[in-house]
Length: 146
Image (cartoon, rainbow, N blue to C red; front, side, top):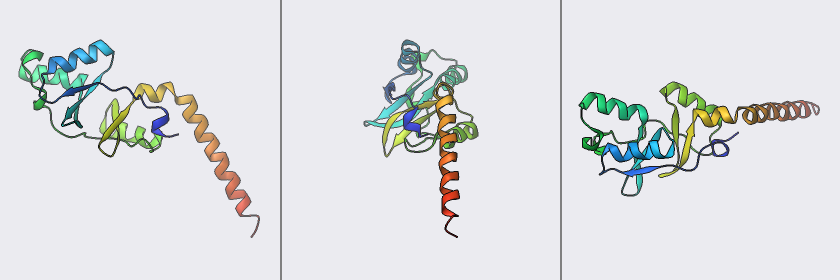
C-alpha cells in the first residue's frame, strides 16, 4: 500500500516570520501535533509538539517571544506519496518520529502519522497478503514453461 492512500492531506502551515504562539494555537485549535513552517511558499521546516515544548524549556521564554525562525531549516526526514507504507514506517522508526511530511518535489502533499498507519493497519496487512499471493502466482506460472 502506498503512503498517498493512508496519509492525512490537510496540513497546517505557519509563515517563518511568526512566533511559536501561532504554531501552538494552530496545533491546539486543530487537534494536530505538528505544523509546517513555510518560507516563500515552500516548506522550510516542521514544528512538532515536542519541538515546541523543547523550545519553551530551553529558552525559558513565553511562546509569544520565541521566533519560528529559530527552528532549524529543512525537513529532517520525509516520505514520497508513492513510497510504500512499510518504507515510511521504517523511516519513522529510524528517525524516532511520530509523523513524516509527505513531499512531492517541493510541495507538501500531506503528513503520514503513526495514527494513520494504525488506523489503516488492516488494509495495509490485506494489501501485503494480496501482493504476496500475486507474487507467488507469478513465480509459480513462470516456472511452468521450464
